[in-house]
Length: 211
Ligand code: Z5A
Image 1 (cartoon, rainbow, N blue to C red):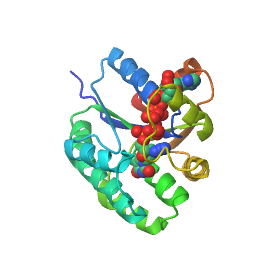
Image 2: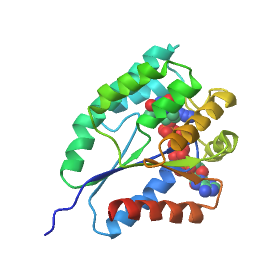
Image 3: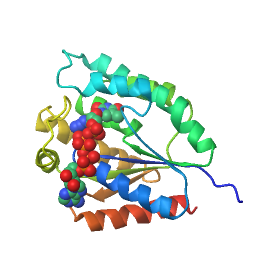
Image 4: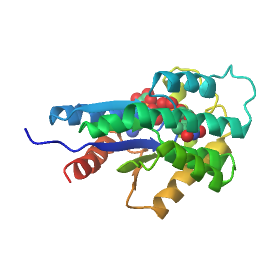
């Protein structure tokens, strides 16, 4: 049997834009094509990462200063890359992650205002030379995203409770990153119907994984 090359696809973007829904569609599509996949998420993806996620996202977490928040995202990512992502890719699997390093640039730099040099340094430590093949950015007005999350009937997490301007700055951060690095970012308008968003994303996934 021919060796299959591993890839990493990141689905990222505005809160409530449909990442979880779209990742299920990507996973089903790749499985139907006989690929081995690993679906994962950030923050989280490993036992220790999921514990860090609880601290980062629980509305019950006491006051978290911005630097501590950044270090926790980076710590969870360092574990994620080493324990789960790189071994899966080396085994020829396709990793699909709900958010990854671009989220730190969008949320902790563009939205929170921490220094970009510090974020780049921490991302470099966490990634240890690794980088995803593509970041598929589901772009949506955060007000619409919050409405979608509310309609799901779940409580908002610590980050979703941030002011709308904060979520808007993060959204702009993704758009700016995509403008600066069109080779590694694809923007999808997530206000379109689910069918349209799914077919656009599958087209990108096929281009990447058939290459
Ligand atoms: N964060 C950070 O600050 N720094 C970092 O480095 C990292 C993350 C990695 C993680 O939350 C939070 O951490 C996030 C960024 C920050 N904060 N915010 N805000 P998350 O990623 O776990 O949660 P989220 O971003 O808020 O997303 P979500 O709630 O998981 O939503 P989603 O996965 O994008 O959407 P969904 O659950 O698939 O869809 C939402 C609903 O809309 C659902 O009922 C769907 O059926 C519906 N839907 C989906 N697509 C459509 C379309 N096209 N039309 C209509 N309805 C749709």
